[in-house]
Every structure is written in C-alpha cells, then in structure tokens.
Amino acid sequence: MLTAAAGGAIVCILGFLGLALLNNKIKNRKDLNAVTHLPVVAELPAMTKKEQRQVARMFTDEHSVISEYFQILCHNADSMLPVTRNQGHVILLTSTMQGEGKTFISANLAMSFANIGKRVLVIDGDLRKASLSKQLDGKGRKGLSTILLRKVEDPFSVIRTLPEHPGVDILYAGPQVPNPVTLLSLPEMEELIRLFKERYDAVIIDSPPYGILADTAILASHADISLYVIRSNRIDKRHIATVQQLAESGQLPNMGFVINAVDFKSSSYSYYGYGYHYGNTSKNNPS
Image 1 (cartoon, rainbow, N blue to C red):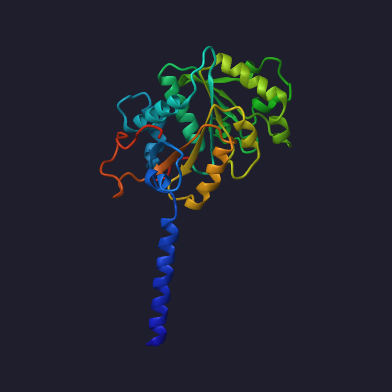
Image 2 (cartoon, rainbow, N blue to C red):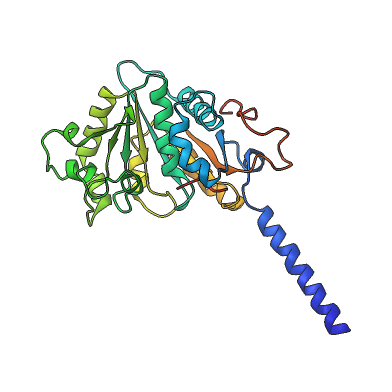
C-alpha cells in the first residue's frame, strides 16, 4: 500500500513538474509581454496541413483569413521602418532554432508587401542550409554566394522572379561555400545591399537562426528592422532575456517579435480569426 501510494505521489509530482515546464514556454503575446518590453509585431495562427498547401493561393483573395494575418504583419512591419527618400529598407528575419517558421514567414511577408505595390527582393541569407532556396527549387543555383565570389559581373542577372507573384524577386543562397562568415563579411556584401536598396522598396533577408550561427550577426548589421520569429510553445521564457540583450546592444536593430503557430482557439482569446487581437507594434506552420 505504501509503495503504491509513494508511486502515485511521484507520478503526481512529475506531472506537476511537466506542467510547470510547459507553462514556462512562450505561447502568445501575453506571455511575451510579461517578460520583455520589446514589441510583438504580430501573432500568426497555427494552420492545418491543408491550409499550409493553400496559403500561397489564398493571397489572391483579399478576404481570406490567412492573408489578413500577413497583411497585418506587413502593415506593422512597414510602420516600424524609418522614413527615407529614394531608397528601400532591409528587413531581417531570424529565430532561435530551425523549424520556427522563419522561412515561411519571410516568403509570405514578401508577398504581402508586393500586394500593396512594393517592389520586393527576398534574399536567402542562409548559405549553409539554404532553406528558402530549397523550398523554391533553387538550392545550388547561382545566387548570393555566386555574387560575393565575383563569379558574375551583373548581380541582378542571378535574381529570379516568382512567376505566380511577379512583384517578388528572389536571390537564392547560391552554391554552398566552406566559409560563409568570411564571405558575408566582405565589403562586397555592403555594396550589394546598397544596390538592392536603390532598386527595391523592401529587401527581406531570410537569415539563419541567431542562436546557432554567427552569420546572422553580420547580416543584421545591414538591417533597418529585425523580426525575431518565435514558434508558440517552443521557446523558454528565460531565453527572452538573451534576445532582449541582443536588441538593446544593437546587434538586432529595431527588433520586434513575431509569434508563429499560435492557438487562437484557446481560452486565452475571446475570438478567433481576422487579427482582432493585433495592436500597434507596442497545427504547425511550415518552417
């Protein structure tokens, strides 16, 4: 009897510990606001596999729920950009680890900017994994590394336009190189960004996760704003202090959070859909 009771007590304790660990994850805007003063630029909903397959087509329908979430993200990100004349802006997206939806959000944010008449370039800044290039069947093709290695005279010659979204241009990561940090640190990278800002209204860089590689720190030095993607229920609240230090030190300039795969059907929200819960910048989505 005592052994059974002790066993039951241990199970209960482990259960409570499990719940405590689960509750220590960032799930939504409320959780982030409790641990940081940095703004939440937007929350994006968790989606079914069917919705994931349809999301690109949904952007053609301005009344679709999914497109509204990205339109709000686009509006809030645009409002964070400094006012400049005769040049575009650079928006960098990063995250803590792989699989938080950063690449998916980069592509769809670009489409949202294009839908409001902006000229947009998306750069696959991950010279190691090239996730964006892979998803667009461009992995290994000429791209950013090709330009930085001076293997093409005209950098615009390797930029591709998405046929289904003519307002969005893509610069693939390019063939894999053994020294991405060295390559991204070249003066040519700064000159390249300057050229792109002259031609495009928005240059969106899909960078590697900040918590893994030094590459993102170099790419972030070119950014006007940084969007830090957090997948709901994955990142520990204690990690946010580290992210806040990066923002306050200027390593992630003008930073705001984007929370991905939020369960809006939970009791934390009164209504579901149409972005009612979004304010000013003050179930698994793809990666």
